[in-house]
Amino acid sequence: MKTRHTIILLALAAAVSVTSAVWYGVTAGPWAPGPRPEGERAQGFTTILGEDRQVLLRTGLSVSRGDEFITGAENAHYVVSRIFGRTAVARLVAPTTAPGAVPSQAQPTAGPMTIVIYHTHSDESYTPEDGTPVIPGNGSIYEVGTTFAGALRTGGFVVVDDPTRHDPHDNQAYIRSRRTAYQDIQMYNPFAIFDVHRDSAPASDYIINVGGQEAQEVMIVVGQQNPTMAANLFVAKQIKATADSLYPGLVKAIFMGHGGYNQDLLATALLFEFGTETAPRADADQSAKLMANVLVQTFRPVGP
Image 1: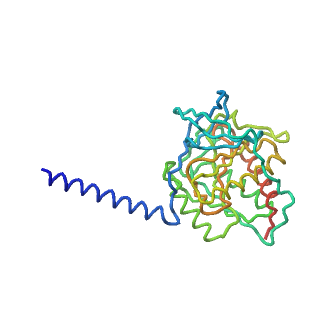
Image 2: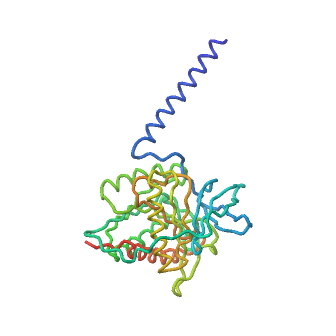
Image 3: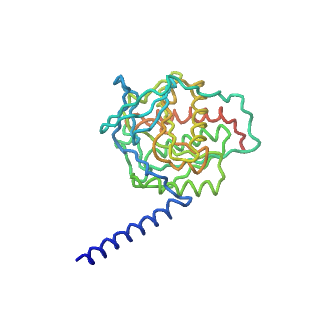
């Protein structure tokens, strides 16, 4: 009996070793998903409260202890300290953080600058127009990406708007989209690569008025589990500083979450959440145009 138990234990140990080796082989290569699969709800949200129980942020992003965010108007820096189901509590790290100098005096680059746009969550949609928050394989988030791409081209960037689908909307989506991002970087040698999403939160949390026109706030997401996290965050802060100067309130927050979001592939890789599922897509389109101008003013591209 002992011999039989020993054989079973050895077999289990061998299976674990093989599984570990296979996982290491996947995670060690250029398509590695990072230390922890990233998650976002297709619907629903987590409410993050301050220690005074006031609502700081609602988001469909996966929220974990140690996540951080910098708020829009105040530039206050918080870290998530406790999680209770779909409610989290964050403590204030710094009342305000220096946004960095607005790079409004940046000189035009010597040649064309390419930006790649892709969509990890191919199904994300906007309920007011689409009647549903998700359309598998063909979410209207692609329409917002197209608007974003067109405005960036008008501003002088060369844009690759990659339509590759990465369904289903699960924890493996970022592994599938990593292949797309890696291949696009190898093929186009872009200046930056942006993963375009929409959040899932109440419409009232995102709808704003900019210059007399309705739009939706934009959240910039940076992954903490990247060797390039400091560079990603620096770029996010520069973009936010420009946005705060041009369109106060447009950038909802910079959210620094657990996971990698494939941002280790490029220092200028960022994730943008253009509004939320419960607000009109037309407002997200308007935000895409505004954010494109923010990027133009930040980086001063020269068209082809």
